[in-house]
Amino acid sequence: MKRKYRSRIQIMADILKVIEDRGKARFTHILYGANLSYDRLKKYLKELIDRGLIREETIENVTYYYLTEKGVKFLKEYEKIRKLCDAFGIEL
Image 1 (cartoon, rainbow, N blue to C red):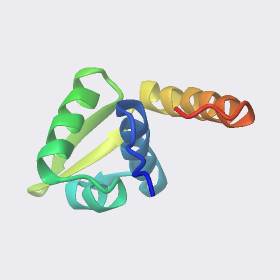
Image 2: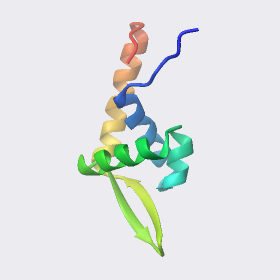
Image 3: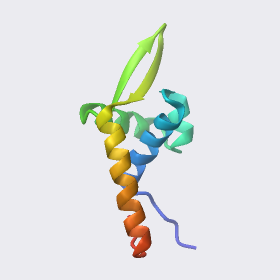
Image 4: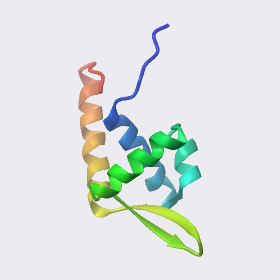
């Protein structure tokens, strides 16, 4: 059976979805929820922060990640595109 890899955009959407579902998420929650290695997740979190899709906040020595308004919009648009692709049998 051929192994199916996720695209960058799918991985980003998976990370954003974990944060959206929890309201706020710690690193380990995202790590397991998005099924990524430690190093890959660190890279993606930095990129998502740099692009303004998420923000991080440390409260009592615990770092949480939150979706920004831009992140919420990205996730909504991604879902529209995913549904369109599914309707035409196109893989993202």
